Length: 142
Image 1 (cartoon, helix red, strand yellow):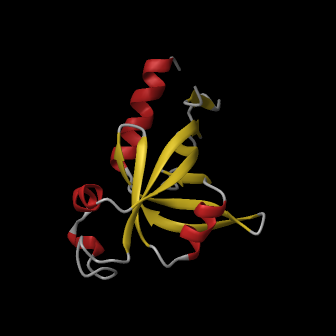
Image 2 (cartoon, rainbow, N blue to C red):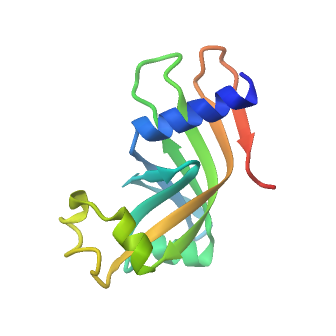
Image 3 (cartoon, helix red, strand yellow):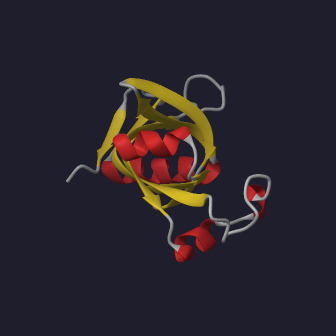
């Protein structure tokens, strides 16, 4: 799979799938939870409460891992493994941009003082479970 095809595949998977797992490091061990992701190109965003353990984990260690895209269709059901760096964002513009009605069960609105946004910048994205059975990598570490 050439580089352009890899980029197109990654963007298609990100556009088609919003639910994935976010793993942080807590006490030197991985800790995963399901999250809803939104993307701008290869950068991912997700809403969270500033009083959660994941926020504490990211403040301690910003390295995260995301799995997204697998739908249990078998071989050729491509999914992504994303290694990234997470940042906490509390800016009004970003919070308003990400806000949607699906967040209402957790927050009173985009101005809720506990609502923050996690921005995940990829370091490496791996496309797994491809029909050619290879792992294809996009390196963003530069």
